[in-house]
Amino acid sequence: MESIKKKLPGILTCFIIAVPSWLLGKTFPIIGGPVIAILAGMLITMVWKNKGNAETGIKWTSKIILQTAVVLLGFGMNLGVILQTGKQSLPIIVCTISTSLIIAWILRKVIHVPSNTSILVGVGSSICGGSAIAATAPVIDADDNEVAQAISVIFFFNVLAAIFFPILGKVIGFDTTSGGAFGIFAGTAINDTSSVTAAASTWDSMWNLGSETLNKAVTVKLTRTLAIIPITLGLSAIRAKQAAKDNQKTNGFSLKRAFPMFILYFVIAAIITTICIHMGVSADVFAPLKELSKFLIIMAMAAIGLNSNVIELIKTGGKPIILGASCWAGITVVSLIMQHVMGIW
Image 1 (cartoon, one colour):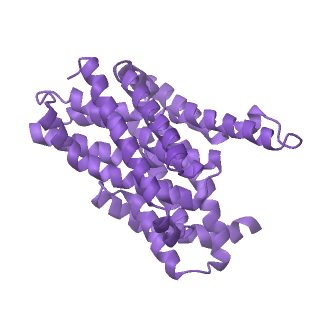
Image 2 (cartoon, rainbow, N blue to C red):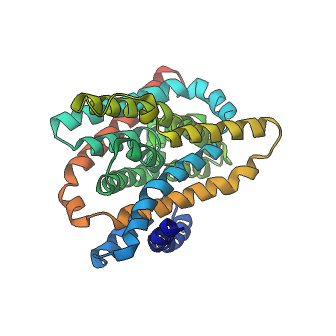
Image 3 (cartoon, rainbow, N blue to C red):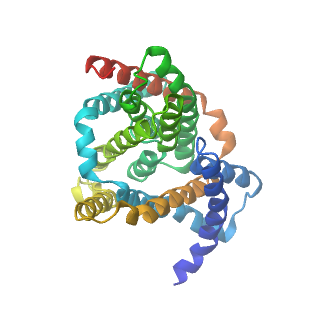
């Protein structure tokens, strides 16, 4: 009880920032609540230097609430539908994810981007933006400045994709009588759900396709989200083995220590959802949990913003932007090439 009282001021602070950010995110979906919350937190912390008794709760929110939000994301997963769609989109997803991670790894060496930042930008670009960053940050012990920087980079290229991809689709000759091809493109080449939704909805509106493109794009996007599982497990194992190498006496590799338990709970949530839907339960039953997950991510981003040093982010922002641009361009090109090779467009 004493621990809860100690954390409460910080948790309430993040909640108070999250509520208007969540509402504004619904009004301006292309920006999204998480970005608004992290920016609000950054602005507030420029004035509010000494957080006093709120500091403990803010740090707790940026870690534990973030992990809880990732677990609840699992309730948005119908594994049956995802696996069915994945048959067509999986080769493209694997290639785009691999491309982004390889580019991030190479540029980390070439232009000396900090390790955690390169991992977060690479994973965020290739999988699902803020959600992937949220899942990966605790695994690699990324600090709040690194998370804030990665989120900011991802946001910038999300907005560009949402605006320009429908134009690009028309220029390069995607089928305008069906939303399938552009839906796969949006779902594999845009990383954040809000921007995927914005681009796909625009394509539907341009060619009067109802919600055909949107449905396809979101399902492909959810398929990509499953890549969180192998990526985080792989990073956990690498980190644990590195710790063992650095300090043999105290840090032997242990699967139990390496395995991020919140990812296991994420998988369990997805399995529960899939079984329930298969038994006839409406997917709408899980809608409140999905919405709660989004809100908790916004709360966590508010906490990360409050813990971030804006001046430092601006000073060190050039290299992460170059990294993000390279990952974004690589994913876009590979997605288009793969669809062309597979005869989708």
